[in-house]
Length: 70
Image (cartoon, rainbow, N blue to C red; front, side, top):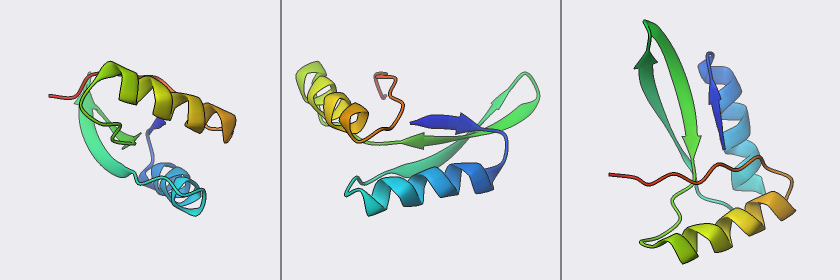
């Protein structure tokens, strides 16, 4: 749902998602020496589940970028 340089920004989006009924979590990643905080909504085990959830998130007004999780 987003990638932020400040954890507060990620936490705000995570809370907005929770209020809208979506479970999400925050992870951090070091990219080119800079820390980013990513808000992720788990979408299931296959692309169809992910696409269905992406549609619901988009309809609720959230930005969406579907990626595979390892």
